[in-house]
Structures are given as C-alpha cells and as structure tokens.
Length: 323
Image 1: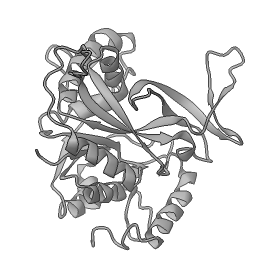
Image 2: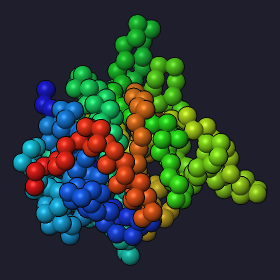
Image 3: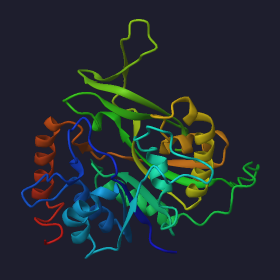
Image 4: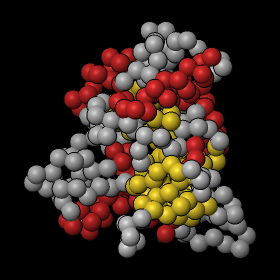
C-alpha cells in the first residue's frame, strides 16, 4: 500500500488576521507554521504533500514553502477554483466566495491515489497528532464499497473507516478573541456520533463558553474545557472523494440556491451525511497536544514563544529544511 498523503488546505486568506498568514514566519529562520506541520508529517511517515491553493498564490508558495519541502518529499499543487463544478452546474452571477473545505478536497480527486490526511495550513497540531493519524491510515485497509451498511450480529462492519484527531477544548483557545470549533460527541467505542459547529467560543475563568444565538438573552452557555473538539485534522480513504462528489451535487441542487453567493460546502457536512446514513465510522484519536495558531495578529507572540520552547526542548532542529 502506498504511503499516506498529507493534504493541506491553504486556499483561504486570513480575514481576521489580515493577510496571507500561511507564509508569515514564526521564528528567526523564516519557518512558518505550515513548515512545522510538514516536518512533523514527514517524521511520522507521510510520503507526499498536496497543497490546495489559489492559482495566484502559486509563486509565493513555491518560493516560501514548496521548493524547500520538495527536496524531502514529493509535492503537488492543486488549485481550488469556482469553476470546478459537476457537469450541468454553473457559477452563480456575482459569486466570488470559494465553495468550502469539502470542495477544496474534492479538487484533489485526480491526484489522490492513497489514504490521506487533511489539515489547515495555519494550525499547529503537534507531533503526536500526526503520528496517530498516520498510524491509523497505514493500518486501515482498502474497504469495499459500502453497499450494505447494516452491521451484522457477528460484527461485520461494511462502513468506510475514517478518523479524526480530537483535542481538549481548553488546549485550543486563544486569549485574544473568539474561535470556531466543532464540538464532538463520542460514543463508548471512541467513534464520532455528532459534530456541532460553534462559531463563537471564548475562554473564561472556569473553562469556556459559547454564544447561543437562539437564547432570548443572546448570552453564553458554559462548556467544559475537557470537551473534545475537531481542529480539522481528518484521515480518509479514497472513498471519501466519491462520497464528497455525490454530496456536492446534492449541495448545489438543494442548499446553494438558498444562498447562491455565500453557501459553502464544508468537509464535516460530508461526514455528518455519512454518519447519518451509517456509511462511515469515524474513530476519534484523542491527543493531549496543545494546538496553537494565529487566528489574530495578537496570537503571534505566543506562537513564536511556543515554537522557541519546543526547539529548546529538542523537538525541532534549528533549521527544518536547511534553506
């Protein structure tokens, strides 16, 4: 079986951060968060990297990241473009917003030929997270199509086998504003049963709280800091691409017309659909790693200091790629 592939979502601009934060250095050697992600992935055993980017950012990514990395692992670039639609569908007039993370992954369907992990380009996940998702993908066989999704009394499981790295919410918060997180429900077998996107979570003295728009007072609801959340680090077999293609056609037919300029097709949307249909099982791989990223410009000093401490502890060498 081919080595798993690392797919990096890097087509978005940092709206709250105010720039293309994916190529903003976080140490004195010019390394970006994405460099550490790729370094950790190679260390874990991943055999190839695919960058999903905007076509106009190709030169920047090659100069700042891709050329250095390509000396250690094969690199491919995939462009996420609005025009990449199924036959018979067209871009709505006035639409400029990308179609979303599931569409971004779907744009890779012609170049993915092995099990793969998906990450955000501007999130630091930690070495343990990459090792766990790699081990899962390396041990997961090529499942047959989930034509019969019924589990028999003998335990015959014909579902697709996917995985997600789960973080404790308290390890993913920032002091500088609110964050969006996928709040996960996990069953006794360690599988994901539900994921709810909370778009306004803040750190509190007792843990965290999220804004509940449906409440009459528009107030916050307390949530435990130990709650498992998704940071968009997923592991898939190639079957995900077939299912995403099916779900994207349904999205364009049913959901997009309701909001043609802003509706987005998210990666967890496909997962939720497959869970509902009992076509997939998603193993939650818990990690104690501390996530960090530059959601806001004020986050950067913390990221820089955290990277420095990791290097001093011997986790990373002074220069990752010997540029």
